[in-house]
Image 1 (spheres, rainbow over the protein chains, first blue to last red):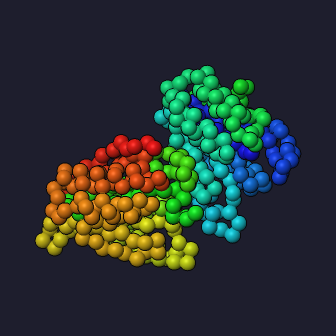
Image 2: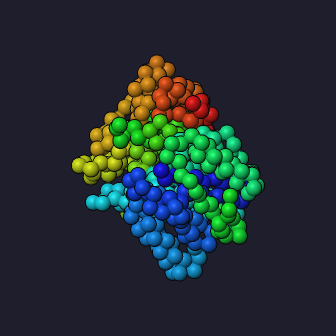
Image 3: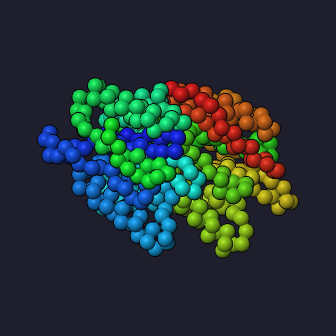
Length: 194
Length: 208
């Protein structure tokens, strides 16, 4: 089943999401990228109802881009998370709400600090040192309580992420096979191989 | 599965001698799974009013933003700060506007209101999710641990507590109540409003 993790460390946020697109019991695709780059220093992992996820992610992507074109500077991570949350909260009380869960991670160039927001489809948003969505969260969160270190270097952060992925592979019956991992820090966003 | 208990969390307010206190836990969960131990539910409205929002997490944030907007509009139109009694009615009418599709929040208001003689009088109130106000003279509670909070507050609270004693009373009431509730806890925050200062303290709690 769909799983995504995010970890903050010293000057960076790592976001990982599985790459399977499943319908019922069938894997339709095994290389789907579920992490969007919203702006030069902002990443968003999305999961939930197929169809809603991509539609909503693209809507967010374009609106964040529009803000940047209009104002000549991008939204900071907390402001972007706040706008995304409000969009989901308004959608929740509409006739057909988006069922999308998000992890919004970014590097705030004004304060030189990483920031990570955990957002669910209800529009619940909270800033966290680490977060996860899906069945994997039941294993990863307790593991991260033990091993997360806000002062960890990128390599140490990736090690912690590997622990999470290994634990989920070991214990979860319906565990995903492959993950895509992206990092955002002072140099911008990039994909890394585990 | 009740929507009021989906994210967990509790709030309490108490009256003291020329002071009031309001406190909440810091947990945000998805049912039994804890997500955050730093989810604020108590917010300043003016220099002399605080509001605590216990209930569904998304509506905590939405209502905070909505109250901020409405209080700002009131301040601009009236050219003065809102009084706690007035704010309690603003909370009530905001919630009743959504009578048939409510925000899943039971708010608690704590503040110091001006008396005609120029002094300050403690004020607390709580409402249900559709805005029925409860003006209490002693204490008000809200959230998933409300039944436990009632029991402890009934036993620990006494009239005319000084600010430091009121802080101790509300802290012990909250911490011990949330330890008996699986959906509340994970730390707490306490605000004591007195005539010349506001004391805000973050408390450590059991992390289980």
